[in-house]
Length: 202
Image (cartoon, rainbow, N blue to C red; front, side):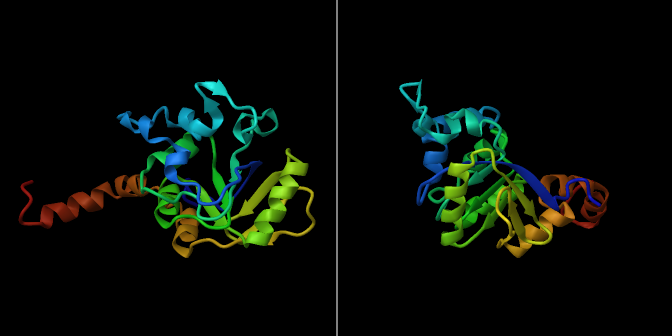
């Protein structure tokens, strides 16, 4: 199996409530001046987590019971707004491997896939149930089976059927979600083809 393949993953969960959370809320625009993504994880939900650089202890990401979370639980139309890659970069660099939500903005979901972040959806009533469960049991873990398209939740008896975009599911199972690595792995084929093109000087 490709060593980049993702067939399943498990982690603790942090709930991020809110409808239409856009990329500017995920990473405020003033942090886009950085020429690399290295520090983006520090700016994740910065304006919601800090007021004049003072910690807002009410925000889930600042609460100790969610400190080890690697999966986000979100609501409707998460990641809407601009197509900036900084938002999923911040999520990845803050240590998150997956996002479970009601729905995602199309470009945001695609950017997540390119970074290895699994995005899966569930009906609204199920998402609401999961928010209630995680609030009551903050140490709950989610187990996502990408291949079986199911989500198992600690403390709940039956797994939920999740929805994934087919192309994303195949990319994770085949380990081809990282398109740059895939491109580099085919360097010899690319070089051979390039030598056959009359407009390239080799």
